[in-house]
Image (cartoon, rainbow, N blue to C red; front, side, top):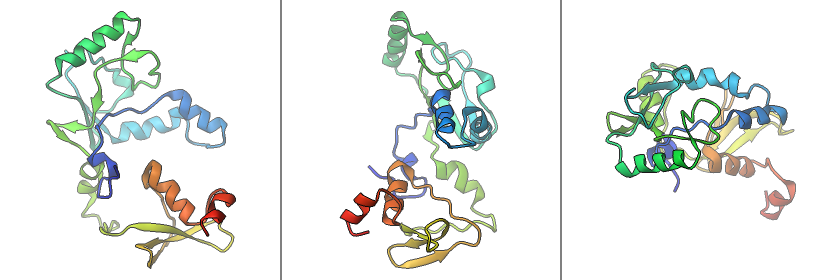
Length: 206
């Protein structure tokens, strides 16, 4: 499924709030992605998160220093909790897994009830969390029914200067272009723009 709407796939996913492993981020840095280490990105996770949780819930332990309680993105443990979910956590601990907060940067071998982007029982997608509160800002224009099909580049393909919308309309950037179309959409747009393996692009006439 593709989330072709405001909020993207956050309007239809399972709502699991999972940051991933510290090791994965640090490996990106080793491969050349400077500035993307876990410790460098943690402040942005904290800036966006608003964790709401019941401290008495024994099956969802929280490491408070790894979370924030005042950001726009609501995160909570789903309530009411399915009894089967608690049985699953208990079974995992009996098999040797540690009961712990998997969002503390070191999730290996940990188990708990899932943290989810839910607020008062309702889905908190990215449009609800970030766009609704910013929609009146003068420096933000939200355009719907505008499908980006290509990034416009300088002749040497070194700098993005704008985007092509719906295969026809060109919008030029004053400062920069930020491409954030998801794990499927972003690579597809780059390929359509002529950025990617030469053999694959030539095979489809790009």
